[in-house]
Amino acid sequence: MPGTDGLAAADAGLAEAMEAMDQGFLWLDEKLVVRGHNQAYRRLLGLDGAQQFIGRPYAEVIRILLKRGEFFDAGNHDVFVAERLKPLEKGETRHFERVRPNGTVLRISAVPLQSGGYVYTFLDVTRETRSLEEVRRNGKSTVVAMANFAEHRDKDTGVHVLRVAPLVGQTARELQRRGSFPAILDETFIEHIATASILHDVGKITTPDRILLKAGPLTDEEREIIKLHTAVGTQLLKQANLMMGDSRYMQLGAEIAHTHHEWFDGNGYPNGLSGDAIPLAGRICAVADVFDALTSRRPYKEPWSAARAVDLIRQQSGTQFDPMVVEAFVDVIRERETVSLVQWSDSMSVGNTHIDEQHMILIDTINQLASAEAQNDRNVVAMIIDELVGYAAFHFHFEEQLMESCGYAQLDSHRRIHQGFVHWVSNVREEFSYHRRTQLGERILGFLRDWLRDHILGEDQLYRPFLPNKDAG
Image (cartoon, rainbow, N blue to C red):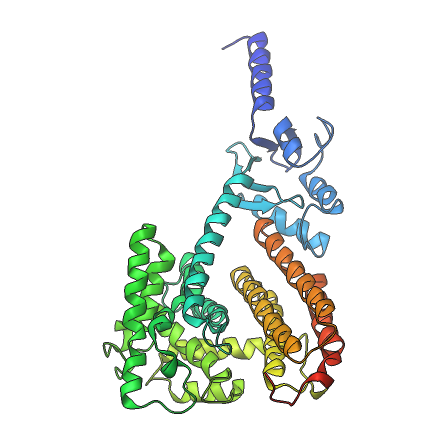
């Protein structure tokens, strides 16, 4: 056996090596008492003092970090500490990521030792995760830009694709909760299908205005022409996928574009597919697409209520739509209605049909955001924040054009208010994305609620007397 001096030298050498590591190191004994940590651990967590936690229970360390605000939305501290210790007391191996308040992303592993206790390792992966987020955002921006080319001609459907996306994501999530389609519905699929669904109508870029914007019913010939958008969209997205080198967004987008008008009973188009022969992505998007189309204004119809649209979708279960998807979708709509931050009232009307409906959509979007937050579904929250940014910009542009056309003198001031709101929401989106927040929190939701309600009832009422009639615009 090596002598005592040799063991001491080995221990000293090991300690020196641990101090030199870039990876943070925390050692707990079998009683979950801190026995050691290195310089990288202290640096990554912003701690002072080399021996600060040595000999102290790990529960105390967590409480100290809690008091200094290290954890987002921790809630009850006693419960939080107990939850953090539970896996350790069971001897479980854990791998997870955590974002510090300063935005640093830590990849953390907790591995039990055979002799008892734990070794924690901490790796700073901020640059890696931000690069991945940039790739994801750039991919999504490409998807949205492509979809907007097809939607830009119609002021009433310009953000239809953004409204469909969270509905698709939430329905996929609900199906997963029910244990449906386990071979398909994983986290990656749910994230990708929501974004890919934005591309479902991209083929309409070639549909003539005389058909796309027609106020009356279509002739048989016009109906056949508009049906071509499924094949056109599929071809466009397949070509884009080849150029992008197998993008999952484009692959799923092409699948959805091609199949979201197929019927469950085989009476849809373009190929008359039925049942499980229709890809799940197409079946989910079909329901969300019809619901949003029914509840939105179109050149040929007034918007339906959500209840009326749900009734029609239920009637079409088993014929046009997959019954399992319908059941999940109806639960999503029901869940949305349980959370309401803002309620529309007649006092909010500015006397213009388009503006009032857009305000209703903004109110509904904020309520959807609160609903997704209540369900703790980060991916859907992210989708709805994107929808809010996109729709707010669309609405403000429309409203400002209307105010300009009626000679409203305070347009510049009103425009600055709009710009400030879009800037604020965009910053919230950046913080949520890059700081990897799991939730927005009551402060942000409360601000959205109060700003929108006060703005509609306040500044927006000031230009009402200048409108020529209630249907202006």
